[in-house]
Length: 209
Image: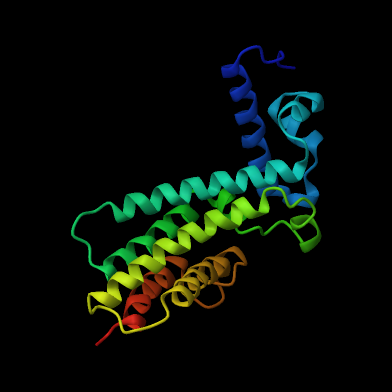
């Protein structure tokens, strides 16, 4: 058993160890199938150590949700950082960034999509819900601003940019969820092909031409 953390740096190490173990176990066993004891055993800590940093299993799940948004946001910022991109190219960049997030951070993706929580668990503690919802709204606002830019620049036809942004996000999520549910195998179309098709469909569906 690891010794009790003594410095701020030690505390952060303990928190990171707990988060890493929780991420792995939520992905492997689901939210209901994972216990605090399982998390602390995997991290090599005592259950008491868990409660020094987190008040519940739900809080650590939502903390991982926030971390997932951080990772996705960083990838989107990176994708949009290329100079001289047109609005259609920016939408393609966001789609590729989301697919990269899915491919490289599968555990965090499933947590960010709240695939392990039922309605009862999700609304059991509302303290973090507004923050997580606002962060998602912020990401959607980025898509909206690109669509607005495309409309004003003549790239896209005149559409409701907010509902279009939400619809596009739903399309991206829907394709990725097909892979999570292992529904791409029997169709004979792999996930990368589906993503590439979607990358073409999204700007073409908005095109002003």
